[in-house]
Image (cartoon, rainbow, N blue to C red; front, side):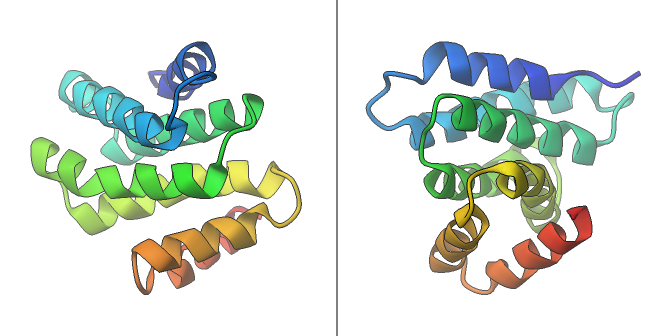
Length: 141
């Protein structure tokens, strides 16, 4: 049984972030709240990887629908992973990878140039992470 955190995250973003001053930052908070409570509630029944990547995919999908900043959102989501990892006793590097696995499929269907912009933003904030993101993009192609 998989829990649909992707749909939940997308619905929250679409419903609540359209008119927020800094939607990317709030999107990060949304993924944090969903992931931490979801990981606590489903730990024995669902892989943390599935939960985190679904929550990130849902947030990114919602941001596409309300036409908000995808590079900024991707960075905000990845930035939450250290905290999520700490609160959930997970490996921060794994959490970052799972977040990127959720971000990649959305970026691939977003307008042309989005994947480059997201890769650029990730590299700027997390030095050396662009390569991991590009590998995940290739794998999900």
